[in-house]
Length: 269
Image 1 (cartoon, rainbow, N blue to C red):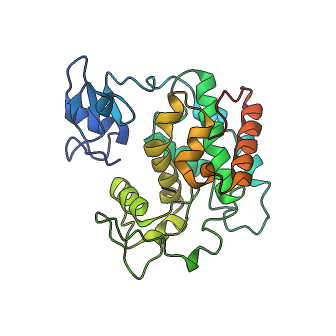
Image 2: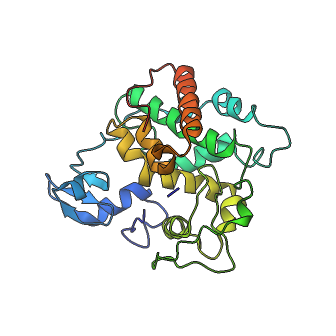
């Protein structure tokens, strides 16, 4: 699997939501977009996927959907109930923690129409279900035998004593993801990747961080569920694991049905 948001001032550092902070720095004109890096412009680099304020072209501003009303106890616990009772993820992954974390991501499940919102929520939980086997696993199976160190990455060089295998709801993997997530969320992802599997809040934050940074914007623009598979594990889209693609789609269809919406087009990547 493959935000850093700058806060406007020390006083506001603990108040502003991540997605809103960058736009506070921009102070863009009425027809300009504020990028996640805090600069104004009018091209797709500013107004597209990385737009965080101003006249963003996609997706639509947050709607009034009440996410906790969609991700009900019955929905969330229905996923958990399909895992074994001795799973390490039971008690670690909870709806309460998820609802606490999404307060920092006001666009999650709230872009476009109500149908769009429900589809995004269904997509997110479809992938989480697949990655964790119904919230069973906190760490990747047999992950400790793999380092997942990209030695080409110079921004987040690996700690040779650490391993960057999948952890958390979205199975965060590779040093560059741990480093970027840690920088955005305020933990040392390179020297303490284990926190993703030991701190429930940090764990869910990394999943939402990855989703909003790499998946949300394409999905909200109408590219379909297939685009989310490609963003999370592009190798599966290259024919290397057709069974995985099929399983992810099955989960997505099931959750869309539970939430009372059609799946939309472009299911396959």
